[in-house]
Image (cartoon, rainbow, N blue to C red; front, side, top):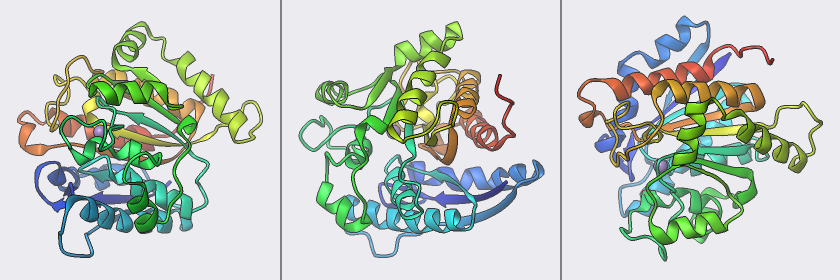
Length: 302
Ligand SMILES: [Mn+2]
């Protein structure tokens, strides 16, 4: 297939520091060549901030304007947007691009050790990249997101959040009270260990089929967001906020296969790889494997 590999080398709007170095390391390690070796046609696009840094929120939304344009252009060209980025807030830009490209009906599977559902009212740290899912759903920094990205909030029922195990207390309360579907980390891990993830995905796929007016058996469109910290720190130590009791790399790849058997994956984001903490290269290897797996030929449906 045709793939636009969109590299977003930013950590909270600052270029080439912390997790902002991750995308460049994926590229240097041959991410594009490995996809080409599988027969894909790959364009590599770099996104850069347009205006000087003033504050994190403005800088993040500036970067996301570039991401939205790159994603929309890829979709116009019939190319699959595969986005590697420092932070999860890149998903705001990806969703703005999907809206512009006519794929706003795509559901969202958010794999992350963290809720990313904080608002300025619930956060204990004030950390802006603890808020991107709440921003996407119109719960945080709503005016700034709507104005700068020209996008409507995403319906919470279109989101499945899985793997969360490190929440702020009030963040978790508001996530569980929202319409977002949630599979917390302990349940995800238990089900992965038992080989029992499929029914959870079947349930979400059935809901989304109804919500988007598809026939039984049709694959609902889905945007897959992978914060690599959904993995256990033994598999992915190279992240900014490691949290114990995550998936193994094999379990994550298996989950991706199950997702692809049930959904039409229309975009991928892979975030949070922080190379300076990845001494043995395991996080790099896991991230590259995710890119390959999402782009792999689909295994036939049983
Ligand atoms: Mn995250």
